[in-house]
Length: 85
Picture 1 (cartoon, rainbow, N blue to C red):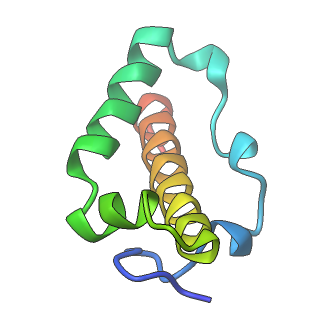
Picture 2: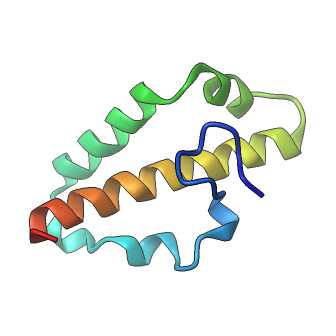
């Protein structure tokens, strides 16, 4: 099921590989990780921010999955940029 605003057209549940496998934490410092996550949160669309605090559990869960996918993509992209891929 695709989630609105997801540029890849997938939700967190549909990732073929676990989020943890998308990057190697040892390659990024805590400061780098914090910056990446903070940047993703700052750029998250308003609809996503609103749905993260929605009353309906399903809506919140879908928003959380979208956010997790966005963070995983940013981490993977950062890892790719560091490795020259």
